[in-house]
Image 1 (tube, rainbow, N blue to C red):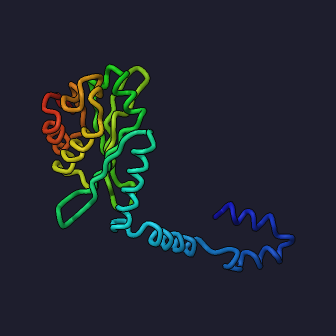
Image 2: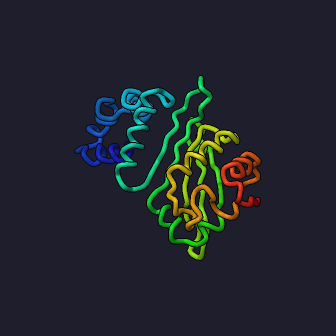
Length: 202
């Protein structure tokens, strides 16, 4: 928008023409008008943020991603009547390479959740390991809440898109040896249920 206004300033021959251009909403709509148009476009193109059409579109995106060869993703659609949380799990090719080539991926896994990124307050949880070069990702999932049952379901879904050679050959059913988490009983309990052989630490 600001770039467009700069273009208007540069295109005006004199101050009078600039005033006319800036005052005319046909050529220079204000921010609120543009924001309303954008929201209207989103509703028409994608539907509500929690609507059926949004999940249909997201399912298409997940299918396209799985067919692209860039990694794997799996989606559980949100359904409040059935008590199903929204879950989207992603494992990229980079993450697969870390699993297969970095020894530490089988020894140590950090689990870190962050929220409040957008209006629906979905939570993004990243699994990663560390080595000499720093932190390296192992997988991620996005959920509609951070309850223990949702985290357990998300971890089990994530396991379905991991290969048998992941966690440096230990496999997705065994998982890494040690987990480091936030001070969250939901995270620790979910990890214990999904990977009982792993030891957890704060």
